[in-house]
Length: 92
Figure 1 (spheres, one colour):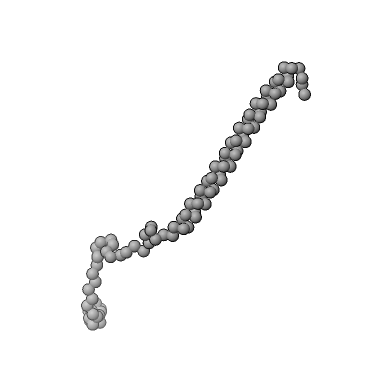
Figure 2: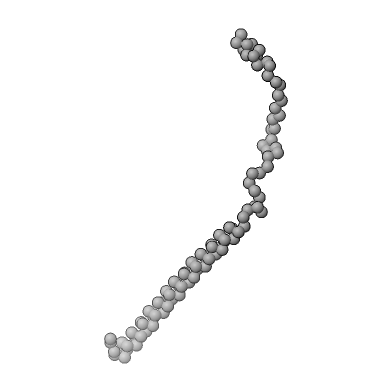
């Protein structure tokens, strides 16, 4: 009885057809712009900054390596110099 009453109340609504698409995407366009429209100036600036930092780190490490090699050679020279003094009979 209650169901028939609802049918009578809603009978004046217009008939609308709804087309349902069974595919995942029909006519939707991408909302993300393509790679060509991205700003290239900022990318260039970031790459330049990264290259500069890489070169700075490389130079710092080369400087440290050169410093350690020079200290190593200096130790060998001191040992040789000390050995020559002992063989001559001079101790300082």
